[in-house]
View (tube, rainbow, N blue to C red):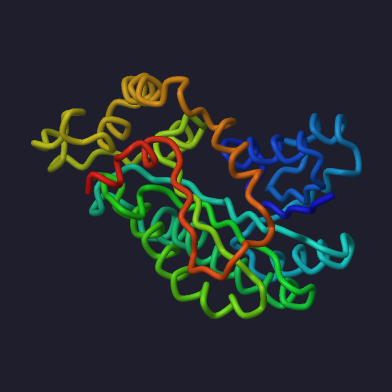
Length: 271
């Protein structure tokens, strides 16, 4: 029985991955801010699901939770770094502390700290795999989503340098890059108040700017988002494929990219 450690398991892609891993007989150490959000899965899967509270932006708490997971479970085969969220708004409209600092702390700094924290444990056990959930936003950009794109670009460049550092220890890395997959991500994203200078922005129309469509007309954006995602590649299907990734690769490699959703269908490759 394989053991997986995952952050951000409360909803969206993280929840789907957790469900898929449990369905495949894995043991899962799931972390999230509110542990009661997984009470239904705990009731079904019992001690195969270990749930702990975690605010990933609290580095001391992050290290304590990771250390305890490896100590109590004995071995963790795969670490899934999944925490992240978005903020819709022109760069000028973003607030310093509540949006810029908070988003960087969650999407970028916390992911880096998690990778650094698990390395000694994975090295001591002879290897393992780290799955970092990024997005196709690391390859292309939409107006009103600049800060989110910056975090995705940043974590991918970190992993490109990080992967060969840990490869000799038997630690493999994979960058998971979902595209337009139907989850709660877009619905939960923050939206800034519109600055008057951007109220009649030439790129405000949805044909020119998918990001602004969600930011300025949330209900219309949600309907359009669901239509784009459709039923072809829902989060459950992508999560199932992620859940099948092995703990070890057959041969050494640099960070593998696992494109899903619209990213796999060509949105990235058309760049």
